[in-house]
Amino acid sequence: MRRLLLVAAAIAALTAASVAVAEGIEGAKTAKSIAGTFSATSANVSTRTCTTSDGKSLSITLARYTGQSTGDPDLSGAITLRARSIINTTDNVGVVEGALRIDVASGRDTYATYATVYDHGNVAGLAIGRAHDPSARLVANMSAGFSANG
Image 1 (cartoon, rainbow, N blue to C red):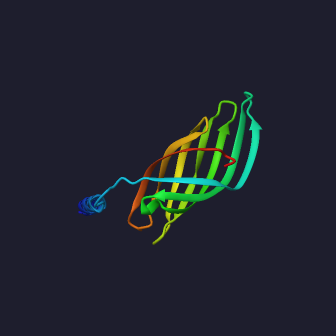
Image 2 (image 1 turned 90 degrees about the vertical axis):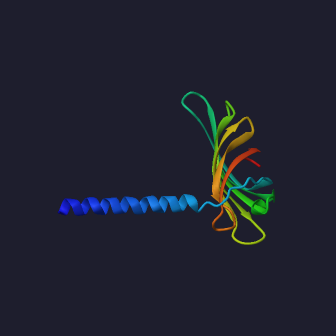
Image 3 (image 1 turned 60 degrees about the vertical axis):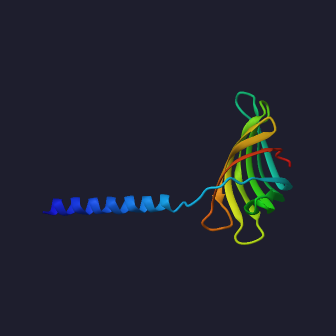
């Protein structure tokens, strides 16, 4: 009897979980393509350098950049980017990751974290976050020219 009760409870839990997952999937009513551009200059930059055991030079930078973003209303306004870059300056490749915040005209700020690869002065990667509408999610391709010094 006890085993039957546990099996019944497990089935009920799985059924409830599948309804919750289906409700979550059904909750996404629409997806749309939007675009935005930004330009930013450095506001605060801290850089360290080191040399690896194989003789490659690395530059590690923590920075905050500010500027303007334009495009879709969710992506228009004053932008602040925080970045941590690790760049192999010998081969001119590396990674840049961080967060961005756009002060939009109405509602909450648009916010996202991003991870990109750096290759000879350019970055490309993915940004994930939320738009100013609390129920709007942001998943975006991100590409830009990049200089750790701004």
